[in-house]
Length: 146
Image 1 (cartoon, one colour):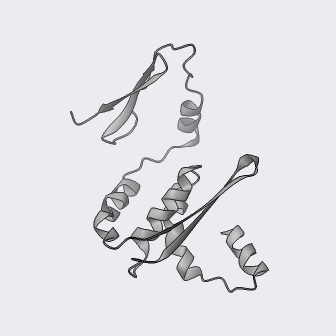
Image 2: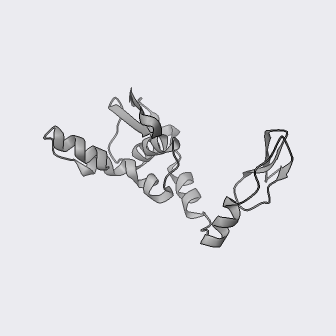
Image 3: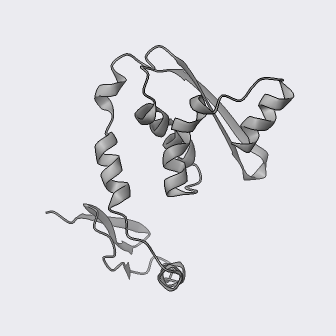
């Protein structure tokens, strides 16, 4: 958002917050998820903009550490609304479990697998799929509903 305001100022263009706001909703709720932030913003825009965006051009800019930046552009395709999962995404956000600082530190200091060793991951979330273990440098996910 800061970069957008700066670019608008340099180009002497007014900032249209109504156009930007839908793309920032999910990022504000989730926080920094690094490279996924770009795509989270895209889905947030598609799911939270009231007008039909079919045929509209979309620009996506991502800036990372090491002065690496990407600009992607595309056109929203007709019928995109049939592929959105807004209610499901809202349920996921609502059903999250808050971590206090001590729980966060416990997860942060969990052992990293060394030289292919087995590390079993205790269940800590209610999602359908979860990381159960890392063994021989391979992540093993399980379906909790199976």
